[in-house]
Length: 348
Image (tube, rainbow, N blue to C red; front, side, top):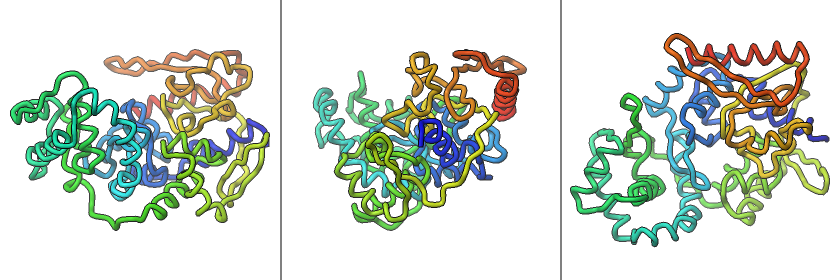
């Protein structure tokens, strides 16, 4: 298996070139967690994995709580299903709290203050209230909890990790927070072994072929934990050794047609962010130009990155500007034009 074949299979397993979903919440449920700090881009990441989608449909699913947005892995923002958020938080919170410990100490956020913050949020949001960041700042200040510098962000993240708050519906362009207990159903608790198994199963079935180090990079857990999860599911997976590295993937992997297909992918799409080694995702001629493949929206042709793109929103239309790293043939250019129209249609 060469790098191009790796990219082919990843694009297929990530449901980019075989979008089968009708509902946005089904995309998120299958992918388990999708990076979402670039909110507009993350909505497109869901949409391009659907048969038919538009931005309004996905925004409505978020408004209705069918998709939640919270700090979940590594830590950064992720979209997650309300049916998965509790066991995922229980699994990842200890690791993230240890990562954040230095920042808690720097901003004098001891256990007593963090717990008081949780209580203040819970009281303010009780009864299906959804408050903006500015409103929550005021609530904390009224309860003698300073919110200068990064303290407010850390207090919010801690409350998210403790399963107290999560995303609410947006008010205009403002994000809100709501009580998790009022947005997500109670679900059975999983043992750590069960949670690691479920995490590994979802990852390798939707991001494979991938290595255990890719898995650890994606979820932010230790290699030891990731090995445990993989060991519990590897009998259900296929594997192949490439350059001394073992790649794991679904057993029922299919042949993939890659010719003359193009996609506009957002920044932080799982296509790139889900792996430690991303060279297979980039046309070998353009490795230098694509060094920011995680952070830039990318143009993908025949399942490898060949350029960047950006949007400009105007009153009556959305303009897409392309920065292609090299020449494409006529069929590839036609595929890129179709990808541009697909995004514009999504935004309509």
